[in-house]
Length: 258
Figure 1 (cartoon, rainbow, N blue to C red):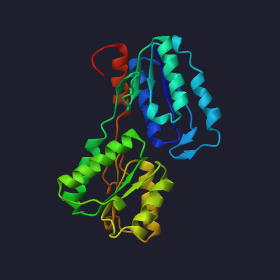
Figure 2 (cartoon, rainbow, N blue to C red):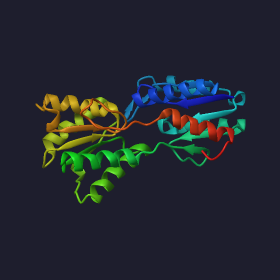
Figure 3 (tube, rainbow, N blue to C red):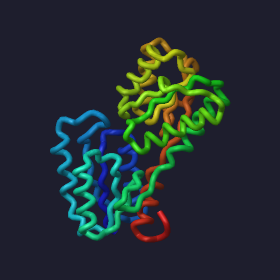
Figure 4 (cartoon, one colour):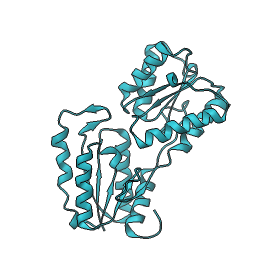
């Protein structure tokens, strides 16, 4: 089987892990995988060479592949995405979209709620945290909105109020994690007992900003990231890209429900 994989934002750690998971699983399955990716965009920050980098998505001849795995949430240009969708349709091959339920393709997605809910409950029950702040991803990100809603729902389920000033919409970069903490400390009416970040990079930025602000004791303000642990004292959970890819391949082969 020959599978084309198209995704963007390869500079983000999450996409690097996705590619690594796909390659690891492809070796086990003896599948030929052809990856087309670039770093032509950042959430909310236009890249200098994005038009040139997007040309990589014109390279695959989809008639030469048995199927496509696509992550539309990481290809942020609607016109390019529409062109890709049209070309896949013309080739008449199956396509699995990761994370986004588009009208064109089948889809599989990561479970975004459970990890957030578990982290928030642990902070409340084991660390007695009440003022839990959240560094979200972009407002127009599917995954980010699911994680943010899980934060809100879990706080409410534990009878703890949250305020809009306790939420910061970042762009998944460590710089936005730094900006979030600075805003929390400068503008929020109360100081955070804990901060949860929607990805690794923003958590790293949050930790750096807390250190700059004089928080040296990890117990003074817990910083948790959803996808992976930063250090033993922190809590977190990690998405399994290999399983996501495995579900996508199952859908492409028609072997069961993806």
